[in-house]
Image (cartoon, rainbow, N blue to C red; front, side, top):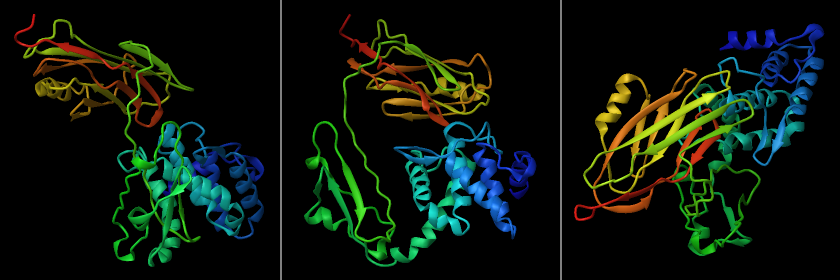
Length: 362
């Protein structure tokens, strides 16, 4: 929305045409306006230098954090992605973009690395901004994708061979077809290093590594916990009345979730573990939906994911039920509460142990 962009840039401008100090979002919008004005080279250079100096560099690339809320009320990790995408799009303009190729590549790497598990970037506005920033790079490399390319994958220094190596040779007729390679035999206990690279400079590819493993639980065995972050915190509790659990007898579970210290409200995700053979009472979940206590839920084989949106300072407190179908003595998946727009802020509770007796047991 040009009007919003112009207003954001205008509000953060200071006297004498100086760049707004450390306001990356506004400076990126001001840079776009300055690039369109002839004879404004000094302002362009000043704004580009300001954006380069305020970038944060770490192992996930270069990124920028908004000063407060973005013009579209983005905050947390979603606001960081939105701001980085806007900055990247602005820095790509102009003749100086070539001199900043390293910074642009780092920012591009940050955006590509932070796609969420649903294939978007946490919020609608952040997703739109990221796609706008990625589109020029995709267009520039489409010519390279029109011919066959070769990629190399090394695992702990050893390159793939045989049919696995051949699977990394692309076919221009199947640009969207995924290639799957099982690396289990090449992995070792501890740290494993995977390097995916192209044979030539011009390449266009997307790679994803998926790993499944089990580790012993090392945290404290608590049913409630508080986790604080840099500017917000979470309270989370999950407990099931598992005493004297019996096959066919309904069991009630309680969930408590609260976010505190944040200037803004947003979605929270509460994942609560279920024991094997649990038959969830869907009517108890339907009542939560009807009352507006939860926004939606996902019922998975070993857990329930609750989507929570609560502007109340007291947070949420609700119950649901399930019925064990057979006798077990097993732990469920850990319970996790996370901020949807700031997933680095999360609370993890120990797996709940369920001991369910059968019809012939006392």
